[in-house]
Length: 269
Image (tube, rainbow, N blue to C red):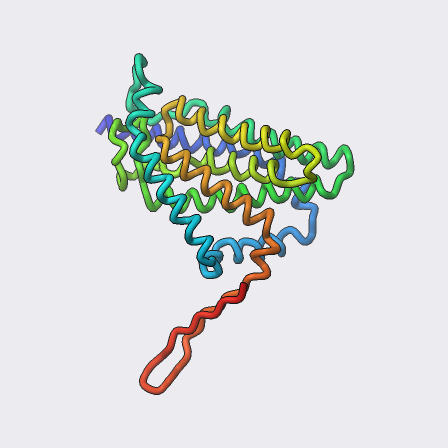
């Protein structure tokens, strides 16, 4: 009974720390809320984002397959990577995550700095970039959370078994990593090409450092961070190329015919 009580307390503590970590992003919401078109645009984008598989073409599905293969490959090294970071250390299986807020801070700082720079320079492009970061973070966070509920994988600080799936855990994918790559990719791929190298260095560098920190802290498996990065990048690319998504249309209909029904699917790219 004491063990179960401690386990519940640990999960509550982790949840509180996550809420604290991502409350740093609240600073982004205030400027966005002033835009009267934001709610309407976000609703349209959300519909397109979550129905995107209906409009994927062969190349899109190929990328999905490549991503799944990469996550699978990373999974083969999950145990080795965990052993590397806990070597010579006492690694209690407590499930604690004391550095959650610290690991979320760099990505949150990018968004805050983007809003601040846009405000000081009165730059509409900067405001738009900040909104894109916020939207990509929301989409990637929702996707990651849904995958967590589906996988229920235990964290490496809860078990030494990298195959502990469906154990009521929340390890796969890494939410910190997906949010960091969502924000970092928008930073890296937005704006003019004048400082592209610097944007990519900062965006992907900070996102990569976040993923490394989660491994170093032994709170995620390698494949958790690879999957999180994939979700973050995909969400950011959707947001930064939303016009392409809007140009694609797809519809599914059920048509009555003699003797039954016909399922019809139409897509225009």
